[in-house]
Structures are given as C-alpha cells and as structure tokens.
Image (cartoon, rainbow, N blue to C red):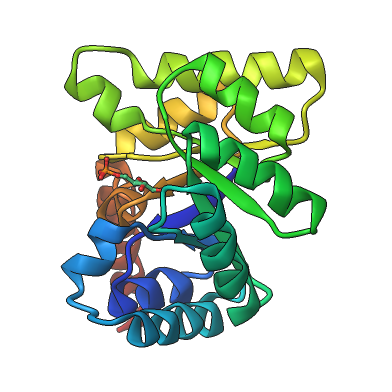
Length: 218
Ligand code: E4P
C-alpha cells in the first residue's frame, strides 16, 4: 500500500519524506488555507515546492466548480510539474472534466467520494485515483472503511485501473483497516503514520538489549 501525507505543511512533508516511506502528498483548499498561503501564484509555487521535496504524486485541487473553469485550472496545475495530479470534486462537471483530462493524459484524483456509485462514475471517466473519505463517513455514523472495501471489490470485479486512495484518515487504526480493505493508497496525517511505529514490546525489547550489552561492554 502506498503512503501519501495529507497536508500542505512543508515541515511535515519533509519529516515524512525523510522517513523514506512517503509516496506522495494530498492537499485540499482547507489544508492550503491552514498554511495561510494567499494568492494563486503563491499557491502554485507552494505546489511546486512540495513536488520538489517528494518527487511523488501531489494532488492539487481545482477551485472552479464548472466544466470550463475546471479545465482551465486543471491544465495550469498539471503544467506546474509532472508530479501534479489534478484533484476534481465528484460532481457532474467534475466527472466530465476527469474524462477530458484522462483523454489528454492528465492524471486526476476524484475527491469527495462517499458512495460506490460515485466511485463507479470516477472510474468510468478514467480517474487515476478515487478518494473515499473515511473519517467524514465515520463522523456521521457510517462505515468509511466498509466503503473503501466495497470500491476495491467493485474495481477488481470490473477490472478498472483507478486506484483507491483512502482519504480523511484520522488515526493509525484507520491505516491498518485500509490494509485489510485492500486500499491502494492511504493519505494520512503525519501523526497516524508515526503511530505505526509504536509498540511497547519494541521499546521494552530495545531497552533490555541495550542494558544487556552494557554489561559486556565495560
Ligand atoms: C484528502 O485528499 C482529503 O481532502 C482529506 O483527506 C480530507 O480529510 P478531512 O476529512 O480530515 O478534512
């Protein structure tokens, strides 16, 4: 399973990249706003900086919600760097835009996906990635991971090449559940990725090894 980090924060992106296991980055307008990056030119520079750090897929979301606007914006984003994946919301004009981008060889991430039906449309339009939002479904007492599993199963059954990118991951247990569900990618906060390292037996075992070694090294 590929790991993306779900942030526009450069320090966190560098830290995850330095760990050596980072495959890409997802951003969205809220994450860009969190970093306070004002103005389109600065936002575009920020995307390029992220691409230079990770050298992996970087999702940059269109703001337009109409077909022509999405095409204009998506083409500009895609031209910034070969690693850019144009993120498009799962609405009618978005599906049409994904179809257009796919015909031009521009890679896409269909975002804000909350049902198998939406995932089917994204795949038929030729999306590179589809992003079911796990945490937001859990927030309304639905089962986000069950949706990921159903999309994975549907894509395998029909042979769609679209990769399932589990988004809105909130904690380490979600990542483990994504593995069980067969997600191709999980995009996670840094804390959730680092949480995978934690095990009390690792800490206790290492402490004991170092204590025992100290006895023979003096
Ligand atoms: C990433 O592609 C999504 O935009 C992001 O995971 C949404 O996460 P949230 O539900 O925690 O805002």
